[in-house]
Image 1 (cartoon, rainbow, N blue to C red):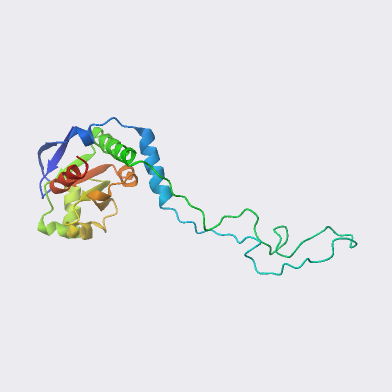
Image 2 (image 1 turned 120 degrees about the vertical axis):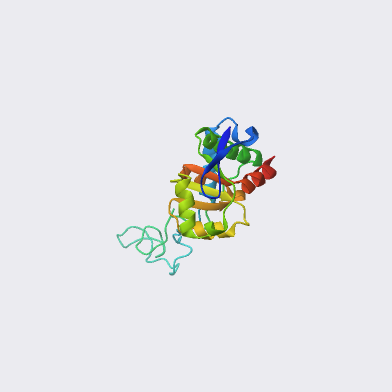
Length: 206
């Protein structure tokens, strides 16, 4: 697998070979689906909460005697069948949406996503960011010349200026290379590394 290398000005400058250990794997859609589900589920917060009959305000006194009134028997005013009573099976804030996945499986799913991107020629590499590229106008110019209409830039944390310059560009997203995730890789067509960030990726996983 190879990726096109671009200069700081956005001009093509040859190609770089991608390591098969990360970018030449078999694409396993089942693992990708599980990793995506894990990310989405673990981001959920249980906000919806319906009070049970133990939580609503009201007396536990029996409303009227059991027999002799001609009406149906009743308990207290907090019963779920009465207006203003507690919910019987409503959502509660103590729900847990957390999903677990083995570390080896998570890595295999990430490598599958990277391999799929490489197979679609969706990976590009820029040598580094020029000093004037740390402004939004210059970053837009670089993105346009690289023909990145929808892309996620995986950069090193040291490239803080790139994060600032790119955060107002709606068609691209800048993330740390150590925060690669299925949501971003599936949402955007292109994945762009710098030379330094792809070396950091290799150091993390190889």
